[in-house]
Length: 109
View (cartoon, helix red, strand yellow):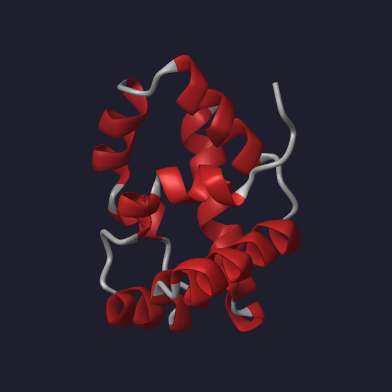
């Protein structure tokens, strides 16, 4: 099992990052909203369907340093020009990313 996420991993799940329109994601990030809590039931249903490989990838993300995740989002934005990545890579939204990662950890435990 790898211990770092790559751009290729992010690219594979690009549809998930695009679910929230960029303007909405940024509004939620500015408010430091707990999106995981708001979509708890949907997330749980999705988690139940994950393959072993997808669970491994999720564990890599959840165990990654927030700064490393944001750097990967910045790299993903440079390669794809997808605004959601730019928002998630913004250092001023670090707390938003951390909050939602921590909420995902709670669900899985």
